[in-house]
Image (cartoon, rainbow, N blue to C red; front, side, top):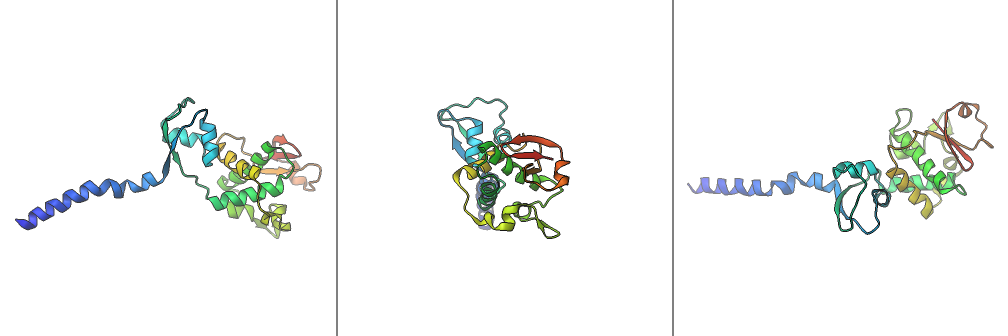
Length: 200
């Protein structure tokens, strides 16, 4: 009889504790954000470096209205901090002196390549891609990739992440004044920002 009681108590204890164990994974995938005055989904997405669409989806929201004090779940970015920093260093090297929108567009190209089956499926793989002895990005070849990123480049990476899923699918960028590749000129231009043309 005592054994049965112990078994019942142990089972009840296990059931009561199950949310802590089985619910831990889903809880760990998000964090809670308290909406501040004047905040928008866009500002929150840039702050955390996650897509706006993902924030809306996880909170079951369709509109754009937010209220101060409102609590909402924000997912963790699929891109790690070290990967963000690597992209930011490339943005800093490739888009130095370019408009801020151009920096965001360069970061977007990196993220689009990671998602594309035409390129490596990791940030590091995309940035350091070498095909037949040719690096995909000049800063990797000349060492500029190793220089620290500035604040604008880091912000541009988070904005590119927030913008994810809303762009025009650019996979390339180049400066038409100095590019020597005939092939790149054959690609469809998606947008021109500053000295760079973006294409796919």
